[in-house]
Amino acid sequence: MGDAVSACAGEILSLAIEGAESGALAAEPDNLVLRAARVLAEAAGLEGHALLHLLKRLPVASGIGGGSADAAASLRALNQLWGLGWGEARLAALGAKLGADVPVCVGSRPARMEGVGEVLSATPSLPRFGLLLANPREALATPAVFRARAGGFSARASLPQAWGSAAAMAADLAGLSNDLEAPAIGLCPPIAEVLAAISASPGCLLARMSGSGATCFGIFPNAAAAASAAAALPPAWWCWGGGLHGAAL
Image (tube, helix red, strand yellow):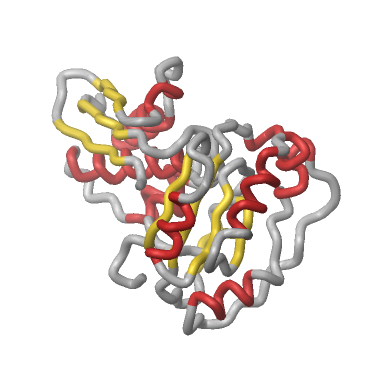
C-alpha cells in the first residue's frame, strides 16, 4: 500500500508521477522527491541528472509520512544510481534537512523517534499484528495542528523490550495518547468519526490518530481482521487494511 520511487539515468533531473493519489501532486512541481535529489546532488558535488518515477498510492498531507518516505526512497535510489556508496547515517543526516520524518524513513524499519524526529532508537520487538489505516479524505497541514495545540507534551513512555502478542502491545499503548489528536479534531472534526468507526470494528484492539492527522490507525490481531474491517468502512474514505511488510514482522 506504500508509494514506490524508482530512478534511472537521464540527461536532466526530472520526475514523472502516476498512481491513484497522484492528482494532489499535479500542482506541486518541486515536491520532496525532487528536493531530495537536489540536496543529494549538491552534497555529492554532482550535476544530479536522473529520471525519477513516483507511484503515489498514499494520500497527501495525511499524517503517515508518505512524502517523507518518498524523499527517503529518492535518497536511497539515487545513492545507488550515482554509485555514491553513502551509509544510512549520512543519508539520514541529509534527510533531516528536508523534514523531521525523513531520517526514520531512510532507515525504513520500526523505530522510536524523539527530539524533532532526528533522535532514533530501536522499538520493542514487535509481534505480528494487523494494521488498518483510514483517512476521511481531508488534508490537514501539520503546522496548523501545532499552532492549535495548547499545553505541554506527555512524558516519555516506558516500554518493554518486547511484546509477545498484538493484544499485549495494544494494552501497553492504550495507556498512551497522541497529544496532537485533540487540536487536529478541532480543525478536522471527521477525525473523531474515523476513530469511532475503527474502534467499533470487530477485533479492533486499539485506535489512534497517526501523526498530526487526519489518517487514523487501528491495531488488530491479524492481517485478515484488519483487511475485513477496512472493507467495511465508508467507501468515501481512503482505507487500507492488512499486515506489515518485513521479515521481522
